[in-house]
Figure 1 (cartoon, rainbow, N blue to C red):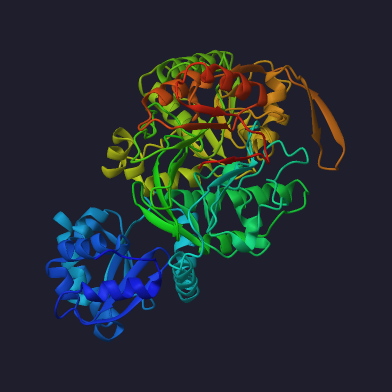
Figure 2: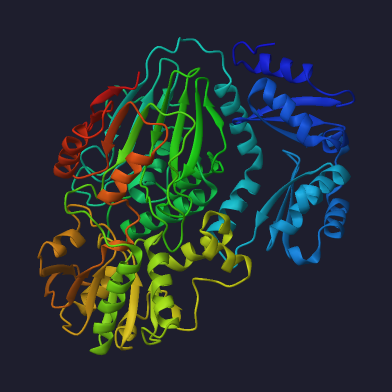
Length: 636
């Protein structure tokens, strides 16, 4: 029988119609996009769980989870004893938490595979014996304040989160009021510019915002165009965050400050990293005496409304929109967004920032999708001259620049984005030292990089096989005896510990501890400043690359101080997490299926326009667009 409509009542009826005998289901809850079946007989589902759940999912085409009814759940103290007796000691369980609201038991372990068991047998046994549904989590190899705080927030606010997920669930599965007859895409930011990524996708029924970032150069146009008539926070069904860089997620708490209370979808690593970079953004603003655009409470509210997805997991986010996330190859947890709109009406893929090449940390971006009519693609490195060296050549260039500085007994200063580039560069330096290409000099790290490293160890499955195997075998790729974490009160001593390497944020010299080191080292001819990431137009990093040599700093008394920059300046571009021109073209050749429409964004105006002209003459059957902010396009 065909399922007509998408209302909660219809879905409930269809689930009850397809339940096995003896299922003894007490209630069905819509928890966000997930449908939870509560039963007094978990054994009925455990015995043939995969077949039963698959049959129901096949009928209703929705995500299902089965949980034990409160009346049959084992007492937590006894259940913990059972769990610890079933799970092998090799798992090294760190914590067990019982969520009485949802009926889940969170098991935080150093080696989650032992908790899952072969073919999931241990997890099934826990559910069958205790009637608590196991939610298995990896404990960080390096202690992580951020991981702890996010998990504790969800635990402390579990009743609030359950209520908001129910509201979201009923909104997703509401009765459709309008026909699927158009889809509009409106650029609220990042079109013919780099920064403040925000793309509004509208149908007659729904509105979804893809990314909501800020502009790093902050020249008065820091935020997306929220004031336009098309954008109504009350009508917004969902926000999707591709990755945890501020130009893609930095304005999210701003939405919650002004009343948004809907869901935010992203991968799990992105959730932790996003909280970290947003809080760091506020701390830097506080130190520099700038007004705060939102509060730490707004960040916590955004986290509480976040819903994490795995790659390849198809999820309803509105009555007429399904979301799937794919690997982007950009940073840990970075995602390409696939939207399936209507009953096959149109499929939109938004790349966000992506890297179509294997890196020291990550596998390349995915290029195969079930359906695709419109592709929205970033063009950061789309210029004629934007052909970057491969990773081996980039590592060689980095090592040469570092070696020259160390030979002069100088200090190597590397501005890094805390997420992505810092880990890549650190791995490259460690590798060079292990191979005796560089001497074992101290590497000093400051500016939340160590916390980001810790978060990487929680998600080895998101990293490439080489790095993930290291973590699985308890080898931390981000630590070494000569790697030192700084807290900010040792800077003057550190720059005297020559020769040495200092890595600090921010990567574009827009603030953070890097500015203090730059002030201390600016007039040192023996030292060097090595840029390894993209420098957005208008940032200090970009101005230095364009020839600026007179730097203005503010002294402790608030007075302006001008220093001449005498350090050697290097630019090593092969570490970028963006695809260069060749990789962008290669991606367009290989992306499957071929889109009918290609929309270029996230690039400087001159580069985007030239690339559009280049592609228009070479992509047969593909309409190529390079809209400006506030222009809208019809996907169908």
